[in-house]
Amino acid sequence: MRSISKVRHPNKRKCLMLCIDKEKSGFECKKPIEEITAYEKIFNKKGQYIRTIEETYYEAVYVKDN
Image (tube, rainbow, N blue to C red; front, side, top):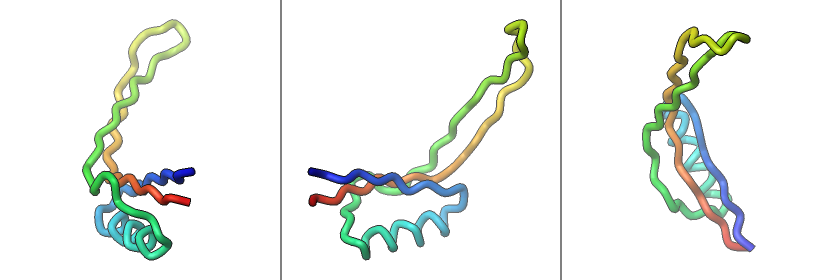
């Protein structure tokens, strides 16, 4: 069975440090660090648009074979 782990952090340097820790624990990188921008739209109870929240973070995907 394979374990899949995603490393996410808003700071690129701290994301890199988390990736190094993952590799030390036996995980293999399948998708390198990339910048992800996620959007979330906020509506009120009547369904009217209020605003959009933009979130940017860095993410990498790791896999470990058990």
